[in-house]
Length: 116
Image (cartoon, rainbow, N blue to C red; front, side):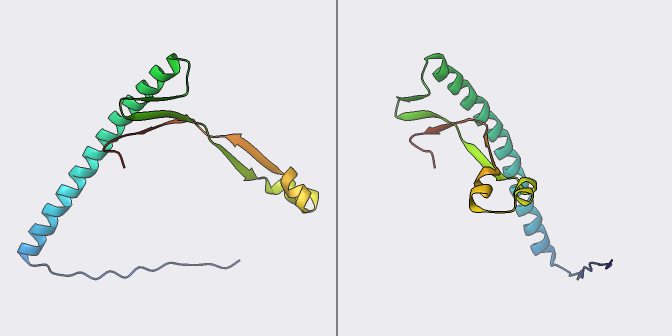
């Protein structure tokens, strides 16, 4: 059994008071913006779910209205089950047989003016 270790080298530097104050102000702004983004993202997600519920209430999963298109996107993901793969001897057909497919969480895609 090998033992490993990690080292870290730190260098302490002196910043001028002007540079230190400017950097601290930039970091304060950055962190405030990150906080605001988290708040906005939560509000956007709440609104998106409400819009999705309204669209589903119409009986549809895709609607175009007011210069926007609202679509329920249903995805799936596949994962190769390695235990099955090794147990079966690894052939092309067996790799496919060992693939497990499961659905992803559905989400609402909303696109329109001003969106990225």
